[in-house]
Amino acid sequence: MHQPRIRGDDGETLVELIVAVAILGIAAVAILAGMQLSVKASDIHRKEATGGAHVRSFAEAIQDYVDTAGYRPCGSAKNDYQAVAALPTGYTASVESVQSWTGTAWAACDSSGTQRLDLKVTSPGNASRRSEETLTVILREPCNKAGDTPCG
Image: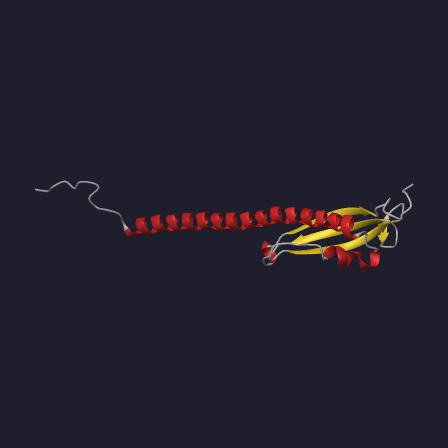
């Protein structure tokens, strides 16, 4: 007598197992790549937010410096203003340019009373994970100080 075979007792074939493992491997690689991209983007965004706060603090420090130590002429403005930056380790601050208002446009810095400073704060890290935040500040030479003539 011939006994009928019951389906399902055969198990999985080697080809089916290889296909299942390959699909799981591809899914795992995609998930890990997505997580890695998420971590990198989060790091860059954190540095951008922190750099933005620091460049605003840098501008406020320059304003405080002008209020207490006085307005700086063009020749020393870049170095004097840059020296007031107090940033956390790894962050760098710089005064990229100092220009004067000619009455119609911004030009090379001269002795006029209005200066345009382009500030930059750079976060730590390699080039692909670094953030640079910039801010433009307009400084006007204070008037009505002791001994100055009133502003007209």
